[in-house]
Length: 260
Image (cartoon, rainbow, N blue to C red):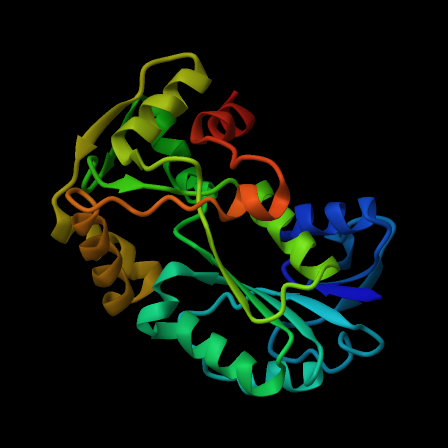
């Protein structure tokens, strides 16, 4: 079989490529900049919104959809009609939104789909890197407890789904425990070798700050979601262990890899 990996230079995609290569699977990658493409794979230069060329001769795709709207997803998916699609989704897909819309569109073009619903990626904590260097991270809801997952665990799940039969399966992909955001920052400090403190940011300030990149509606829903996690932590799933055969990697391990 041949697998197309979208987002091949990103946080999860590069590990998916490595995992497929280790498994001896022929791999094609979609990139915007060929100079950044992994070595040893077929490379197609293009954009996620037009995969007609990239889809030629492939049997399966690891799909990322990096937009806050599902507009245009039908055109992207059409070349994969009847093929295997493994989609990096989100837990909130069960409530609709862009992830739910993409999942619904995928189900219309193939029966061989697998949805990897993450609670959140640990790599999002890289947004705190600059602040962590100063010794203080200022953000809202430090006691929001998140079960964020290591990107390599997501990739391991994707490789299993791409190379085995996981048709019509929905997996909740999480870390091994729910860790408060303030504790995540403390662990980042531990990896840096110096104390890093959490400073509470007023929620409205955070919404205004995030809206610059995420839009007003998406930023507001994100901050309100974090608020809910103070009393109702994100769930912890055993799907990573059950599918991959190894336990999910803890946040402390992720912090050491990225901040040491």
